[in-house]
Image 1 (cartoon, rainbow, N blue to C red):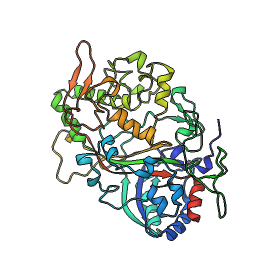
Image 2: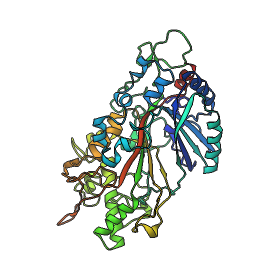
Image 3: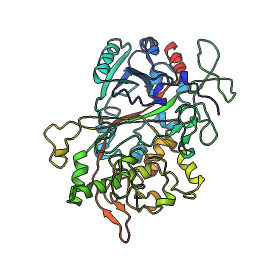
Image 4: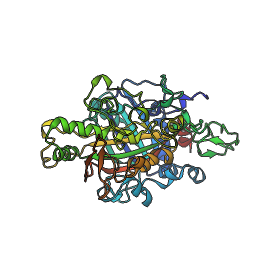
Length: 461
C-alpha cells in the first residue's frame, strides 16, 4: 500500500472537523485572473492540511471547472478532468437522475443554476463557534482580490449530531486506508484511491486525473506515478459534491400523523423509513424499539440476519444508500461487499437553519418560516461511480433491489405513481402511499479540492 502524502492533502478529506461546530461556505467568482492568483498565494499558508487537528479554525478551498479555467489553468488540462466535473450538475440527464425537477429545478436555485452567475471557487470555513467563523470571514473578505462573492452559506446550526428530521447522522462513514488512522472491519475499510486521486482504487487501478507538461516554468507538482513523464495536477486532490437541500420537517411528521394517531407508532414508522432510530441505533439490530446502547453500531450486515427486510425494510434510506452485503451478484458474499465498496461516499455536510420546535411539528408553519436543511457535501475520486451512481441507481431508483414503485422515502424524488414505501411484515406488509416530497434542492455544484501543491501551481499561473 502506497503511503498517503498527507501534508499535500487538504484537511477536509481526513476529517469533518467535528470539534469546529460552526461553518460558512463562501461561493466566489473570479473577475480578474492575475489578481485572483495573487490573492490565492496569500491564502495558501492558511489552508489546513490533512495532518492538522485544528481546535480553533480551519480553511479549505475548492474550484469548479469554470473556476480553474478562469484563474488560468490551461484548457488542455481542464479538459482532462472527468466529464461529470466539466459538464456540471445541471445537464438535462442529471436533472432527471437527481430529481431536480419542478420545485427542485435548477432555474429555481438560489445559486449554481442557469439563472445565477457561475460559481468558480468555494471557501470552506470551520470554527469552534459562530463568532470565530464570523471574525475570520470578515478578515478574509476584506482581502479578497480579483474575486467577487456570490453567496455566503452559514451552517451555524448545532443539532448535536442529528439532522432536522430528528435522526442521528454521520454514523456510517468509511475508513480510508492511510488516512483515517483507525482500525475497522474489512468491509468498511476502503482503498485510498477511492477518495484521493493518484492512488490505487478498489479496482486496483488509478482513476483518470489531469496531467501537465513538465517543460519550463515553476512546477511544484509531483511526477505521474504511472510513468508518463508528465506532472500530476490531480494527485492528492479529489472531487467535492455540494448540494443545498431544504428539508420539509413539518411535512414529514404531518404525513406520518396522517398515517397514525399514535406518536410512538409514528416514530416507529419514521425509523423504518430511515433505517435507524433517532438515537442512531440500526433498525436491523433493534426492529421494535430504540436502543441508545446501539447508537453508534455500524458492524452489521443485512443478508443473513435480515434478507427479506423484516427488520429493516429493503427501501429504507440507510439500506439503499449503503447496501453492505445485500446486492447482486451474490448477496451475502464477498462479491456483494466488493460492489458496495466501489460506491462509498465520504460525507462532510452540515445542517443549516433553526430547528423546528418539537411542540410545533404538526402545526402550520409561521409566516416567513426560515428555511432549514442540509448542506450536503461528499468527497470521492469518481463523481460518476460514487455520488451519481448512488443517487440514480440506489436513492432515486423506484425499482431498487426488486422493488417496483418505491424511491428513497426520505430524500428521494417522489413523482406520482412512484412515491410509495413498503415495510415488510408477516403475514402482510405495511404499505405507505403517496409520499410527498420532503427534500427540495436549492443550489449546488461540482468542485475539485486540489492538493496544496496544485494550489501553489495555480497561484503561480
